[in-house]
Length: 146
Image 1 (tube, helix red, strand yellow):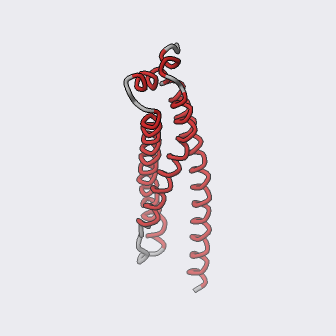
Image 2 (image 1 turned 30 degrees about the vertical axis):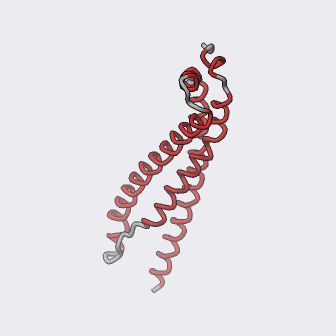
Image 3 (image 1 turned 30 degrees about the horizontal axis):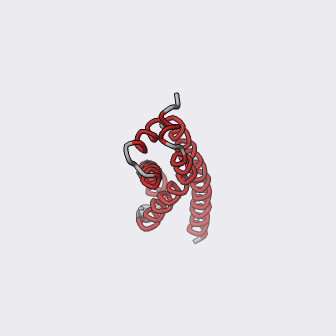
């Protein structure tokens, strides 16, 4: 019985360590998304000004940038989840299955769905400042930029 308790404790420690690393990765990803959108606003100032000159409202421009941010974060989250699940499966097949023949691999679909939802909300939050900055530029000022 001691080996089961010891193995359970090791798996618990590994899980909490992975969750801590995941939290740090999310913070880094949010900084990356905000930087990407900030640079996008600077590099695409003429495009945004042209869209505004063609009739796009400030609100529509902010929505467009928010949609880009949400799509960026959701796609990155799904890609990371698929890659992470692949690594988990390899770890399960090479370590857990050999040690515990009857231990099933379970995918926490609800938790993964919550992570995708939180990532979408985080991407939306990361877009607020760059979208406001882009919407403030008037069409005339933006079209005169080089």
